[in-house]
Image 1 (cartoon, rainbow, N blue to C red):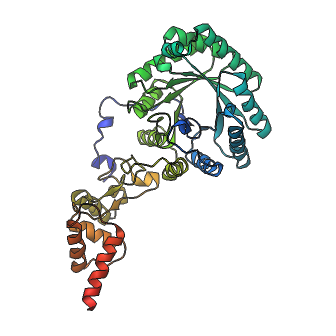
Image 2 (tube, rainbow, N blue to C red; image 1 turned 60 degrees about the horizontal axis):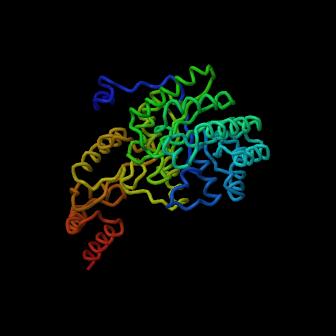
Image 3 (cartoon, one colour; image 1 turned 90 degrees about the horizontal axis):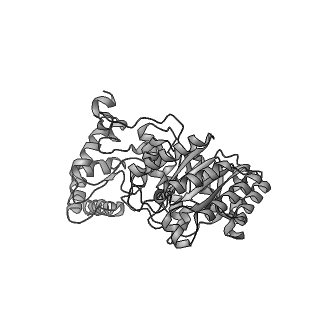
Length: 413
C-alpha cells in the first residue's frame, strides 16, 4: 500500500500552491539580525563558526555574518567567519549589513579584500512615513543617502542588496523612487522588509508584485528578497506568500530569534518548503542547528516548538502511542513516522518516542521496556503501569528503572 492510499491530502485537492518556477534561496540572519533580541547572549566566535557550518550543511545559500560598522569587535568576528568560509571551502556565501553610510560600507570592503571572499553589502534605510516622521527625514534625504551608499558600495566592488526597512508600511510612490534610485546606482537585489511584523500573506504578496513591476519598468535584472518578522504570528505564512508572488530569496533565523518576538523561523520555513516539494535540502542537521543556536544565545527552545522541540515527536497518550506501536510492530517505519505526525521525524534526524505517564496504556509500558531490551513480563508491566497512574506527569527513565529495581528486590527477598 502506498502513501496515497493511506493519506488523503486536502492540500492538493483543489486550490493548491504550485512549485515556483525559480530556485528558492535562503539568507540566514541568525548571526546578525537574530542577535538584536534584547534577550539573547552573543555567541562566542567558536559557537558562531559551528552555527555557520550547520547553515552550510542545511544548504542555506547566504548568511548575514554581521554589521562591521558597529565597531572593531564585530569586524573581528566578521573577518573570522569570512576566513572560515574561504578556508573550509563552504558553499554558503556571505553578506553584511550596513546603514546607508560610507563608514558602514568601508569595513565590509576591507574584510572582503583581506579575506578574498566576495561579500554582499546589504545597505538599509527606513522607508515608511511613520519612520520618516520619527526621524525628521525628507524623502529627498532618503533618496540622497541611498544613492550615495549604493554608488559607493558598487565602486568598492561589492554586490549590493538595497534594503528598505518597514517596506510593508511605505507609500508606493516613495518605494518606487527608492527602488529605481538603487537600481540605477547598481543594486542587484531589493529586499522588502516586514520590519514590525505588520503584514498578512495578502499584504506580502501585494508588495512583492508591486516591486516586481518596478523592476520590470527599470529593465534591469534585479532579484527580490523577503525579510519578515513574527509579531502577528504570520511570518512563515507571509514568507510562503512572498515566494509565491515572486520573491526568490527569503530570510530567517534559527528558532525565530530576533527583535521583539523574532524573525521568520528558518527551521520552520525549511521544513514547510521541503514538505511542499519546493526544495530538496537535506534537513538532517536541523535539530543540531537549532540546539547550537539555543546554546549559543541562551534562548531556550520551548518543549512544544514545532519539529525541534522536545515534545515534537514524543507521546505518552495511550491512543496515540498504541497507533505508533502498532505501526512499529508492522515493521513499517514510514507508517510509524506518519500515523500521528504531520512532519516525518526522520526527515530532520529524529525519531518517534513513546513515554509512560498517567494517560498511558499498558502498551506504552510494554514498548518502553522492549525498546530497552527489558523483558516485558506481566509483573514488570503492572508495576510500572500502576506507578504511572499514581502521578500527574510522564515518568522519567530513572523513576521507571527504580520501580523495576524495587520489584527485583522484592523477588529476591
